[in-house]
Length: 296
Ligand code: DHB
Ligand code: FE
Image (cartoon, rainbow, N blue to C red; front, side, top):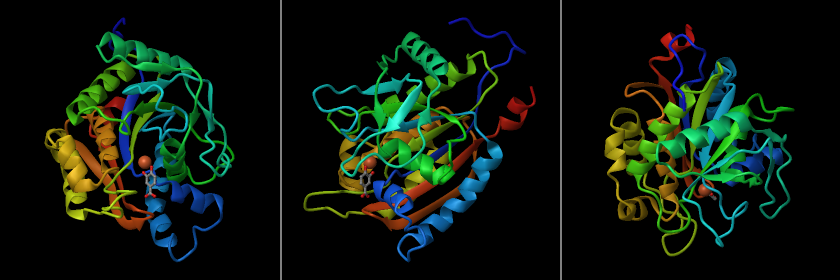
């Protein structure tokens, strides 16, 4: 990896977004239910985020999510993987693929990131043929509604949080820092956003199905902005006990946070409960160095 000379054009991370990826949100959009009494209060709160991202216009979104045994099955589990395809089609999750535009990848940037991360000792699995499930498509719908074509390229960045052993929060945070380095050594002037998905507290099955822990979720959102090291110290047992069996998905937001500045501005945040079985959460964190980065 040859470092760029100063003054050379380079990609830069302008902001990170955290959002839950509840599949029923996609179904509500696809089936025209967003004005219903159940969904309207949630969709109304997407509006400021949609306005913000329409102004910011990222060229590429790196979407950090877990595949829910759709593109991959349990015959092989990769801890961290990256999609290098030209295009990604939505997966059939049981009701047919979602009626959304084809997702355009950025193979050149994805291969650059893969190389940079492997050289930084993060051994990524490279995925050259895959579909994308609700973990990726629902955040796109939340941020961009129902366009004829998605307004940015997308690089899927997958994390195993489904099969034990799951990565630690600290590993995710460090991976985010390495991801930032990868992006900032890319030789194209691109505005990049990193979208962390999943969570917040939810448990889909078993005796504790329906579990919500709003106090944990609010502290998670506070700490994610101001003290991400505190989030890295939450153990797997604590995630399971405090946030239910699927709440650990939010650990993926640490990759997004690691890719940002030490100090970030929270430009938007809300939670809404319930969205299906989940305490829905969104945060938008903007890099303070953004102004200076965009001036070159
Ligand atoms: C729900 C949330 C998820 O993150 C998921 O992957 C599946 C279902 C839910 O709340 O229904
Ligand atoms: Fe999920």
